[in-house]
Length: 208
Length: 173
Image (spheres, rainbow over the protein chains, first blue to last red):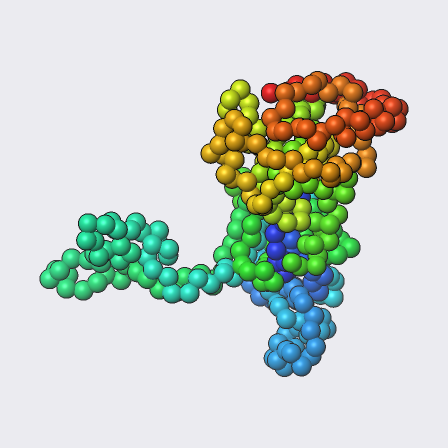
């Protein structure tokens, strides 16, 4: 599994100098990510690679995490990418692992929306706004009466929305800038600006 | 904005466009790609707005075409824009001239500023001589300075890019 950790810097657009076509891109500052550990079937029961990202001062990292990071040194982020890999600890993954045109999926923590009502959170319809209606953004019925005398579990209601891990699939690498460790991905990726993201190769949906 | 994104955009910005603002009359020479062929189309009218910043900036040109108002929005830094000619500087008091949409005929004009030099592009394109005369939409009384300047630009432009000749057939809509 090919993957890299990065930081979403924001979005912009890129012109194709030939056709003048505009491509909306997200700029991700990714890597270099030192390989912290390689998990194997023999030792762990599955294959995976652990990558670190965003080097910081030692004081910023707990001692437990420092032990995990080992020789890679203190970093803010540590993530595991499942799947077979030829990497060895001590190596580094850079944006050069990706090339333009490649399909990727990007995971990150989505922007938190706070306590949201059912219209925003679950795409409910709103009620009528006129004719004396008091049911403009209310959820409506949440169940029957005496039978069952309770609200079923899992009924969609208002509550915390967003701020959870989201994976956007079907994205394409538009440009790679190894000098500045930049990945330009076509389309939007989850999370706020300066949010951490994980970029993985996307082999889904019949892609080789 | 983020410094990295800023530098990415900076790289794509065009510096060869004349300064213009809402109210100015412009001729936009825009490349149209039809299959393999590319030709230059001219869209002439009044700029009714400029919007956005950096590489994402766009401007909208409005003209009357056979009595119907036509607006077209161009990305300012698009490589498809061959060049922009400013034919008149408008004297307006707004940044967005949406009020022109509700007006027809004489009322839909923008007064031209008097005694102001028109901005000239640094790199004149080769298609200048092939421009067919178009019926002007805005008041073009102050457009004489430009027509006076044009002949001076033509010869060197023709020498510069003879290869660009096949595409020099602008078809006004």
